[in-house]
Structure formats: structure tokens, C-alpha cells
Image (cartoon, rainbow, N blue to C red):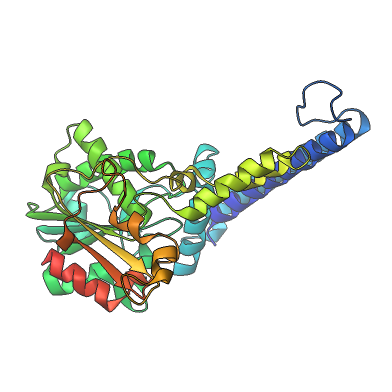
Length: 375
């Protein structure tokens, strides 16, 4: 672990302890209060009970602050640590679930958006990019990962779509790394701003720009193109291909189910404080409840790949479960409502049968389809 990781864990632990104390005190108040009598509930108890809860919160803040200060003093002892896949995966998952809270609370575990290669951030100036990517060419491919993931996880079972497309079609891949717990619109605006800088500083004239997006990355890409056009950026006009792999354009059922659990808990008097636990998920996850209700970007070739656990296009298992996380219709933009239907032409959408959401990153049939489209 890095020094900043330990500081982040300490702060998050202190916040979680204080939050749990608040939850227990709120339930204590509801149980102690005679139903129908008394004033408005405020989540606080009185008398000795209230004093005990205040003391616990005070001790928690004092202890957390002291450990945080001690770690600050010990920082030089940690030295420089190279990135590891395990550490990156844990931090990415944590950001997916709590990323908006980590960012607003200033926690060092919050991921800052950057373009990376081999897990290392790229400096967005022409000379630094030329040194970092000596073989950079005019065919630029930007890969955008999904929820709770990071750029290193494009490598799965020995295969990386970006590296393979570089080898077979001459693309230069650059990987976006971002906090998937932030709202999709926020990430879209941040990506648009960074993409404008990357395109301006790319060491060679960009002949062709393609975006390859897995899962939530596709929603961020759509939002970014809209934001970039609204800010009069140049890069959106350079995008030739936009490929979605398992993107929940109409949302994901699991988030919708989680929302209804919140509603049910909130409607039960004594269990209402427990609804706070159900809300311990980021704005990024919440945005997956309904996906994105806007058309595809114009003047861009858009492609969609859906995974399916079924053996063929009509298998009941695939129609019900999709790729295990994203329904087939959501991934392909198919809707009974003509106004919401996404304008993927028939030859630019495809179902990968017997392929789960994560297997979309390594499946040979999926890669063959990418080559066919991007060639």
C-alpha cells in the first residue's frame, strides 16, 4: 500500500464509524419514541444515551485525526511504490461504490481522471507524449473502462483489445482512468476537457480517432461528446468510430432493484434508518438506474456489442439475463418506444452469445468483430 492509501483508509474508517453511530442512534430514537407521540424525529437521543453517542463520535474524530497526522509524519518512510494490479483493482472498486464521497471529502483514495499507459499517467504536452509513446501514430484509440474498474483491467486472460488493435490495425491505444463513482455527466465534462488537451498535444496529426468503451465508459463517452460540442471543442469532430461493448444505454436492472429496496425500507418506520445503508452507493451507480435518455451523437459511426448468456439470439436465458449485468436490448439500444430507440444500423450492432459482461473484454469473437468494424 502507498502512504496515501493508508491515510485514505484511516479517514474512511473514521467516517464509517461515525456514520454507523448515527445509524444506531437514529434507530434507538425510533424504538424509544412512542408511536404517534412526540415531535419530529431528528436522529438524535437525549439524556445519558445522547451523551454516550456524542462521546463515541468525538473519540472517533480525535483518534482518526491523530493517526492521520502520524501517517503524515511517516510519509518519507514509505518511499515510491510502483503500481500493482491488485492495488489498482481494489481502489477502482472502492471508487465505483463511494467515489463521489471520496472526492467531496478530499480522501486521497479518490481517483483523479487521467490518460494512462501501463498504469502510468501521461503528461498532456507534445514533448512528454512523444517520449512516453515513441511509436505514437495518427490512428488514435482511446479505451474507456466500466464501473468499478480501471485501465489495467482491459488486460484479461492475456488479451487486451487495445494492444491487439495496435498490433493488427496500427492504432495507438491510450487508456482513460477515472473515478466511476462520480456522476456520468461530471465524468463526461472532465473527459471532454482532457480529450481536448490530448488531441491538441498529440505528437502527430490525428488521422483517425476511435473511442472503444466498455459498460459505463460508453455513457461517459456519449456525455463527453455532447459536452465537448457544447464547449466548442475540436476533438468531437475528429471522432470517426464510437464502439460500445456491453453499455447499459437504458440502464441496468440491478440498480433499479436496489432503488426499490431503498423505497421499501424507508416506508417502514423502525427500519427507515437502515435505508441509509442502501444509499451507500455512488452517484455513478445511481446513474445506471435509467441509463441515458438522449440520441446517439451525430456524424459518428456508432457500433454496439451486447453480451448474452444464451446460446443464440432467441434463447430465453439471454433475453432475461443479457450478459449477467446488462440486458441485450439495453446494450443494443432497442426499445418499443420509437422515440427512445438508438439509431444503430443493423450491420453495426451484434450479439456475442455465450459471453458474459466481463468476458466481452477477452472473447475472440468480440475481438474479431472489432477488427471487422475498425479496419
